[in-house]
Structures are given as C-alpha cells and as structure tokens.
Image (cartoon, rainbow, N blue to C red; front, side):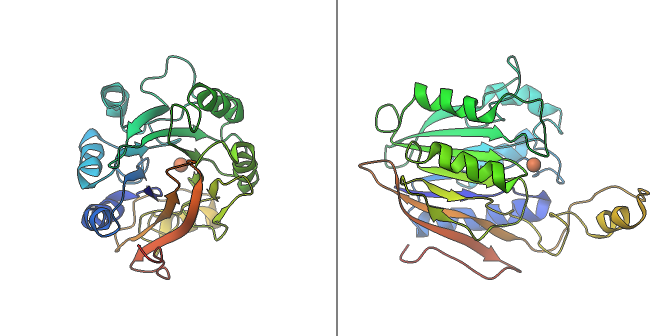
Length: 273
Ligand code: FE2
C-alpha cells in the first residue's frame, strides 16, 4: 500500500497548499492512506473543526496533532466527535479525544495510527511515550489486527526520536517525527523493516521562522522584549512529508521517499509513483 504523511500544516499558507495539492496527489500517486499533522493549522496555533473537516475533504484519512492541540479551545469539544482526529496518546487519563485508532485504507488494509508526544526538552511530565506506544502496539500487533502501523512522534529531540524508531523497529511500518518544522535528511528503512525519518518538516512558508513571520522571533532572540504577536507567515508554502510503500504481506516498509513540493525547498517526489 502507498502511504503519504505530511508534516505540520502551518497557517493559511500551509492549509491552502495542502487543499490545492493533496487531491491531485491522492489520484496521481494512487495513495491508499494519508495522514496530515494539523496542530499548527489555525494561524500557527491549534486547529478548528472547520479546518479539520477541510483537511479530511482534501484527502486526509487521519489528522494528528501535538503540543498545540488545545490552542483553539473548540478542539476540546470536537475531538471526541471525530475518530479521525488524534491528540497525543500519552496525555493524562481523561483527556478528551483519543491518541490512536484503527482505520481502513482505500485498498481495504487496516491501518493503526498513533500520535505520541516526546518528553525531552518538551513536556517531561507526560506519560512515558515508549511505554505508551508499546501498550498500543501490543493490543493491536502488526500482522494480526493491523496491516500497517504508523507513529507520528511529535517531539523536539532527534535523540528521543531515533531511540523511538529503534524501539519500534520491526513492529510498526513507519515512525516519523513532527514538531521541529524542518525536514531531516535521515529518511531510511531501519534494520527490522520500519521506515523512519526524524522530522517530516512542515507544510508552510519556509521564508519564516518555523512557519511564523520572521521579524518577531528574531526580535525576541535579540532583545528578549516581546514587540508583537507571532503571526503565521503568509508566503507560498512548500509541502513536506514522506511517501512510504508498505508491504501488503508483512506490513513493513519497502520504499521510503521524502516529499517536498512547492515554493522554496528543493523538490523531492517518490520515484516511479
Ligand atoms: Fe508542535
């Protein structure tokens, strides 16, 4: 099966690019399953129900999130209503919504998607992400209840992300990082057959600081005195993510290709799709 994962969609620029390009990619690349991280979709901070639904309409099967999931307060209300909306699984018990789910791909495959947050340089008080994913995978193992398993590991530290990749190697189809908004060049298939990339990058305007207008972040580094709000950058976006071919027989990765499409970064598309 062919799976496309798109990294953090930032602001109107990122949303517009995904809405314009994703339907064509689903058709042209014959995608069986699409995951989009949407935690920065509303002006850089959180996601609204309208944006969630528009992302699904554009071709996403699942929208994942991260530390900004509740920035738009309405997410607390709509999260429990939408199975395709995931918040980090290692939030405290009783948190609205859910952090993993089993979905049916266009080819009929059962795809389990997990969304978990890292702790290093981030939120040390969250539940252990390693134990969290182990429990989810043990309850729905690859080759038994699931034909493919994907983890969106929303984390800051590449060390924690790489450790997670090795921890799940051979047990899931793909471990991909989000949150840093910069695509890493370490996409690979690990020894046990799991596709891995430390960070998928963002879908947003790369003439920016993490998708935000660059003036205020620079000002704060220089002066430590806030002069204004962080605003999402409004230039044309580059779509960034990962294309993975997953074996129908084993659920492990057969090919992995970076995806970069749009205004600013060097273009990358999967060969032969
Ligand atoms: Fe984040």
